Image 1 (tube, one colour):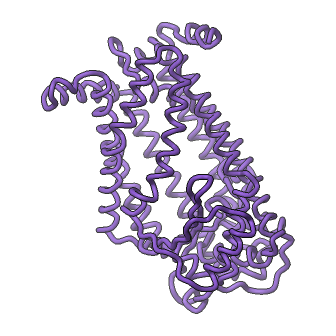
Image 2: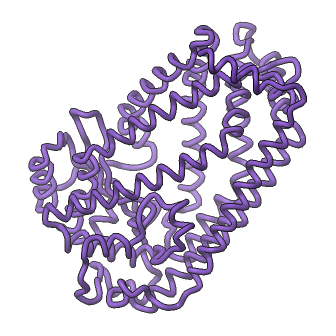
Image 3: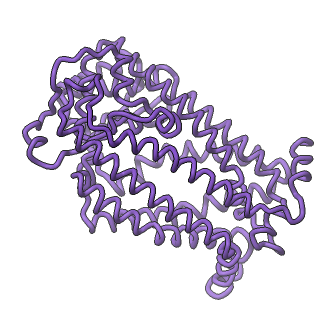
Length: 462
C-alpha cells in the first residue's frame, strides 16, 4: 500500500502532458501494427502454395485464400485509420467532459431527484458513450459484413438479421450495464484505499454469474441450441467424455449457419457440470471422427489444465489492473489534462487509466499469444495421443480450405497477432504425411460456387 501511495504522489504532477502521452501511445501502437501488417501483406502476395500443403491445397484455393487475406488486410488498415481519427478528435475536442456534462443535464431534466449523483450520471455517461460508439462503428461493420464477407461467400446474415442483432446487443448493454457499473462504483466509493481487493472479488463473482446466465438468457437471443441427435457422433463424443472423465451434462448443436458458414466447437459451464456446443456447419462439413478429433483437441485444453491456468492468469491480471488503478484514481493532473478540472468521475478516471496502460496491454497481449500457441500445440498432441492424428490433421486442412484461411504468415506478424499456430506449423508438429487432396463433404460445390467458410484458422478457434 505504501508503495502504491508513493507512486500515486510521484505521478500526480501538475501540467504533466497526459493527453499527448496517451495519443502518442495510440499512434505508436498503430504504426507498429501497420508495419507488421505491411510485412504480412508481402506474404499474402506470394503465389506458390507452401510446401507442406502443396499436395492438399489446389492453386485455385490458395489464390482465393491469398486474395481474401489481402482484402482483410486492406480493411484493417483503413478501419485502423478511421479509429485513430476518432480517438484523436475525441481527445482534442474534449468530448469526454462534454459528454459528462450532457449526462448530468439529462438527469436533471428527465430523471427523478433520487437518481442524482455520480453513479446515476456515470451510467448515463457510459450508455451515451456506447450509443455514440455504435453509431460511429456502423460504416465499418456494414462494409465488413455486406461487402468484404459477402464477396468471398462468408456472409449468411440478412440485413434484417444484422439490424436485429445490433438492437439486441444494445438492449443487453442497457440491461446489464446499470447494475454492474453501479456495483463497481459503489465498491470504489465505500471501501476507501483498499477498494481494489473488493473490486477484484466482485469481478471474479461476476464472471461466475455470467458463465451461468449466458447459455440460459443471452445465447438464446441470438442462436438456437438443440440437443444433438442420437447417433454415431453423439455416442462417440459421450464415449470420449467418459474416457477423459469430463463432467459432460449436455450436448448441443447451435444454428451458426443462419449468420455465417464459420464453424466452431466449444464447451462451457461450471467445473462439475459442462456443456459441449457444436456448430451445425462443422457437422455438415466434416466426417464424424473429424468432429470427434476437434472435440478431443478442445477437451485436451480442459484435461491439461489450460482453462484453469488462463482463468488464474486473468484473475492475476485483474488484480494488477485494479491495484494500479488505485494509483491513478485521484490523479488531478490526469483529469485536468482531459478537461475535468472541478470533478473527478471514477468511471472517467478508469477509462483514462486504461489508455495509459496501452503499452503494457500490448506486452501482455504478446505474452498471452505466446502462451496460447504453446497450449494449442499441447492440445493437438493430446488429441494425437488419443489416436486422432489423421482425423485432426484432415479436419484442420479441410476447414482451412473451406475458410480460405491464411496459409502462411510473416513470423513477426504471427508472433504479435496470432493466438493459434498457423496450419503448416500444426501439421509439422503432428508429423502429417500427405495422402493427397483433402476434400469436404460438398467438394463439388467448392469447385463451381463461392467457397463456404468454417473457422479453424491458425489464429481463431480450435
